[in-house]
Image (tube, rainbow, N blue to C red; front, top):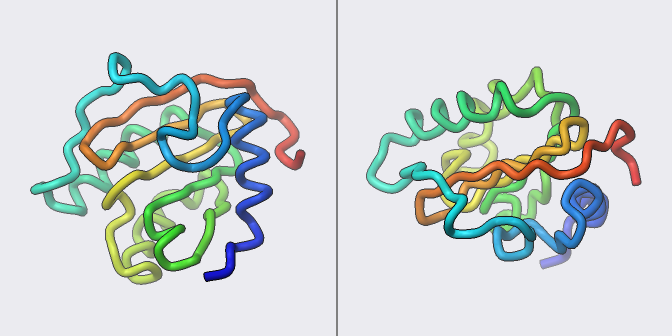
Amino acid sequence: MRRHPSWALATAVLNRVIPGATGFSPDQIPGLSVDRWQSFPIDDRDPDEVTTAFLDYCRPRVTGLLITVTDGSFSTGAGPFFLADGHLDEFAAAYPDMIGEPLVASDTIVVSPVTGRVIVVQHDGWIDMLQGIEQPRVVP
């Protein structure tokens, strides 16, 4: 499968926010460690409940242009999703119909360049937020 053209831009922005980040897998983002993770169960839980909890976690922490990467970004070839913070709820509601699975079904990453924050849900049911370098200008 051919790689989506937006991956290069998304990865470059992630690397500016979290220097040393090489991709959108938790093991490619420096600063994540087992002692930082907070419990965030996703298995055996209603997907709508997981999505609501994820949005509740994200809303006060991120703003501006958001880069959202999910398992579906890879498995369907959709690539990273770029959206304004004001459309996060709308995106979450439309995502299952677009991709065919819940928004948070596995690893899910949201990058907020303006705040310098990266929120990561790990597929085993953990969540963390890294504070990186704020990027008032998003385009590298």
